[in-house]
Image (tube, rainbow, N blue to C red; front, side, top):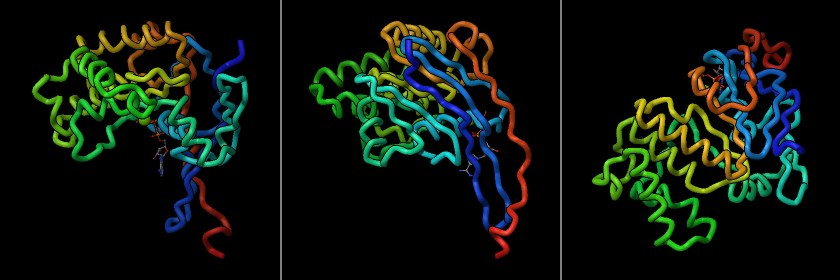
Length: 240
Ligand SMILES: Nc1ncnc2c1ncn2[C@@H]1O[C@H](COP(=O)(O)OP(=O)(O)OP(=O)(O)O)[C@@H](O)[C@H]1O
Ligand SMILES: [Mg+2]
């Protein structure tokens, strides 16, 4: 079976012009993600794990490498070269991202924040809200908070809303950045069950985990990143 995503020699560097430095954030990353399977991305803090997901989601534009995404029609798009329009289209219909932190949408109730991806796909408001309520309940978000905007929520509560929003729709490719980082053991267990269910439905997943037991339980492949070499001086670029 052809992979849904194939990443080849992906690297990202940041140029800090004021300090004349190049900060490498990930270097020469190779990985594959198959439908109905989970590839785990592991490695120490600063190894570039989140940067890889951000490049795939095109929050960051990679410095070099290819990120080949195969869609339903077997058409392959290099996400590194795709137009902004194509990227927005893929984010809408194909590629989901549960980030490490919730970038909060102001003045919208938690229930609507979670239901939004289903509404955006044209599902009816009643059904979308019902599904959102089920997920918030499953993730142990107290019902009294469902009508409140998540801006004032605790870190763990925000993470649960973020997770519910990412897991509600079934994208073809789901990127998960430490999805259980701030959850208690009981909720972590529920999220693990949910990830297994989503995998069985055929979703391709690329997920960052720090806990080896979660990697053992959920991963079909493991890719280990090592921190890139230390910052190098920018040569002529900054001085000329
Ligand atoms: N926007 C940015 N500007 C400058 N440097 C960045 C940026 N984003 C990431 N980096 C650098 O890239 C390196 C990798 O960061 P990244 O967040 O990808 O690590 P990580 O493996 O996800 O770490 P953690 O396990 O702590 O989440 C870090 O040294 C970081 O400082
Ligand atoms: Mg990270």
